[in-house]
Length: 440
Ligand code: GKR
Ligand code: MG
Image 1: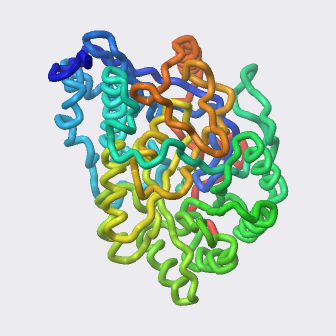
Image 2: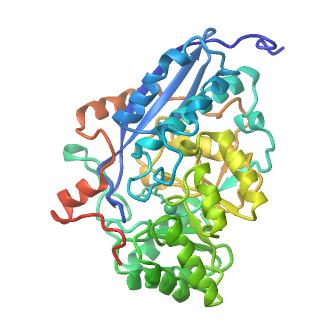
Image 3: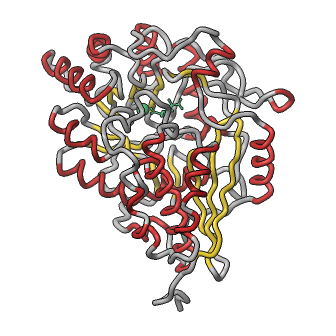
């Protein structure tokens, strides 16, 4: 019998663990990834010792934001807690400035509230799922898939697999700063994980080289839907040019993601492409990152695919609401990712399993964080490009406390306390580098 039937599931403790995980020198329009990506792991403990867990953005500010709501969490009921924290969902500023155009995801203080809420919601749902023996996606309801497809996520990168000093490591991809090496990177990822779709991170080299990269990817993997995402690095004119050049390659399940900055930039690209008879969908996780962005985006037909992400959209149930909203307006749904470990991967899989119109293969950085893991039993399996929902309560994975302690110790030793890709570019690539929008 369910021991919680009708009972209060009191939260008596909250623990926040800041960790650093080795991350390769990946490039994007934001700059260069640091040798370590930062994450925070949240544990909520019920009075009978059930522990609900979640992984979220890393570093000092997200950890502080969680500590700041501690008093509102302790003593709360896991079944009802998220209702009493709803004020966090809209964040400190619901306006257009709450986007990821000028800040990397996780670094815009205006969405600290939704990020904090999301971690608490995930940990509460995990706790409840463990208590009642039901997978988290079945608590959300509307489970429509038992296996969630993810995409290969190639990046231009410098040599190495992350880490610093005696902790520095190699990776199997080496330096990839050309179309040919990106094709090999994807071949290797496909072999290891069985991915079908390809989401390519652009905004790094001259757009002509990036167009050539997509062409070579499509030649090498003709059955793989392809997307390109320069994180707002292009002018409207360049975006239209690239959209036209890749009209064929981005067909059949592909899209052009955040080519130009802002909802107005995206709307202008859409208008320009349609005028040329090109209806390649435009996707966004940069210009559109909050419900408050939707009216403007819909009004101007700026975005045809929204990339959801429970980590910053205010949690899993907000993603389900977003799914419904998008469906109502004929907008498709995909899923965004940032450097993460297996706990986030499982949370992403659960929310995707319970969001019917999330029909694109989800993004994941998981293959890039291949040398550290905090999930007991080691890395979560991605087979045939898919993550299976385990038949277990909650997220279906436990923490490996030895690994957690190791990565916490490493966090304490590193100087990194936030994500600053521009500073890393200056340190390792070009001391005068500045993030310029648009660059091309
Ligand atoms: O990891 O450098 C990166 C990406 O650029 C990431 O920060 C983006 O948020 O993957 C993301 C995207 O789709 O824009
Ligand atoms: Mg993106």
